Length: 249
Image 1 (cartoon, rainbow, N blue to C red):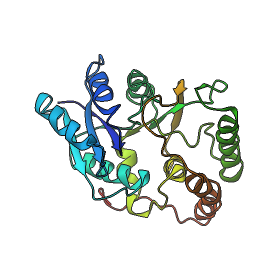
Image 2: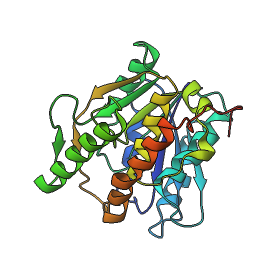
Image 3: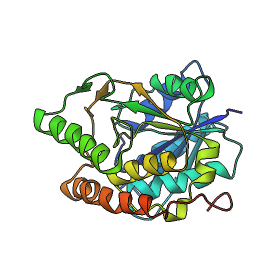
Image 4: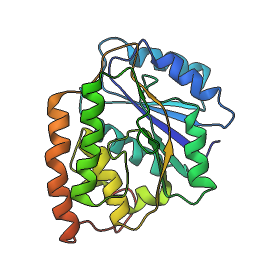
């Protein structure tokens, strides 16, 4: 049994999924992996199910009908984790843009260094991004600056999707009231945790853009992040961000 669960949403990740799972299971610390699979037509789910025979106590899959969005995938995974005994719950991409070895560093930030939320940060020590065109680097960097300006959130990489949450954070956040599905979901989760009094620590990582498969980033997702932070700030200052009364909400 492991105290840590890595949630990996997938849609058309057949080129990466087996390697990413095996790499996580080869780490010095034991992690379990939950795949949230959105009916990939390329057979990603079938690959995972085959691997589950090899790793029956470590690897799990939740299949959903259709491409329902990143945010809803993670909420589904959070609820699944909270019904079990996991104490540390991670978000990670399937495409190796997040180095699985850094899972251990995020874990230690929460388990040993007092953080409630550990964020794998591209911008805490400069700009640590590989294989992105300069325009996308600047868009992402200044989007995070904009989010900090609007929300006053003291996190440099607000849209980061490589995160470790202590169980108590996800039990306290009212998951049913998380509104956004793309990059704004990542902002909303961090902002909500901060407003509820939890400690966020940024852990420097090197982000490497995918070399296999197709990016899921698009203009609509980016626009949601830019416009969504205004409503997020208003919810914060009007006292509408409140802790859940019960777990698994």
